[in-house]
Structures are given as C-alpha cells and as structure tokens.
Amino acid sequence: MVAISAPTGAVSYRLARERVVSDVHAGRRTRAEVCDAQPELRRVVEHGATPTVDSCPICDDADLVLATFAFGPGLPSGGRAVMTDDDARRLRRRHRVTVCYVVEVCPDCWWNHLRESFTFGERPSGA
Image (cartoon, rainbow, N blue to C red; front, side, top):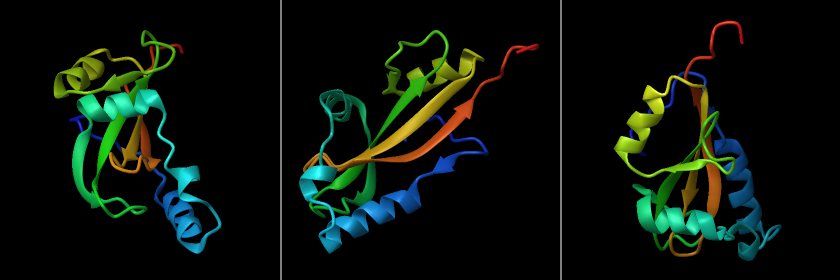
C-alpha cells in the first residue's frame, strides 16, 4: 500500500469479502457480477496501484493490487487517488480530516472489493 499507514480504528471488510468469494464459488453470484471494476478504478490500477503477493480469489491468475482513494475537505468531490508516497505525505500534512478507502483489484479479471477504510487528521477545535 502507498505509505499512508492505517491508524487505530481502521475498518476491515475481510468478512464481507469472504462472503462474496464464497457466493461466487458456490454459484450464488456470477463472476461478471464481481469482476466489474469501473473505468476510473481501472485507470488508477494501470497507473499507480500498489502490488501485493495475494492471488486473486476469483481467477487465481494474477496477484492483486491495491488502489487507495482519499476523501475530505478541499479534495475533489469524487475523491483523489493516492498514487505515490508523495501524495500520501501531502495528505498527512494537510491536518484535515481525511477518509481513505483501500480497494483490492485483480488487473486480469477486474475483481474488486473494498479492503479497508480509515480516517486520519484532526478536526478543527470547536467542530
């Protein structure tokens, strides 16, 4: 993952992920339903995702990559992809509440699932 370390209070979506994968393997969901990465997510994956050593749970042909997105005051309404360590450092220096979402994606079959979310930064006093 890009060097934004998840602080205490990170939310893991591992159990939801396991349920979706189980549903695919049991035939309750189709591969097309879960391998549906949107164009913006695909662009981020192609230009700035962080590699992992985790195999895709759907196609098992490729290692997953992680795409991180940040949302908060002063950022675009659609969020901002955190593509480099410099991006992460700039977000941390803002000292504003920022919510980050880390999405795992398979660059072969386009499986994607929210892996974790976390918040960092301080609220202004009186807020």
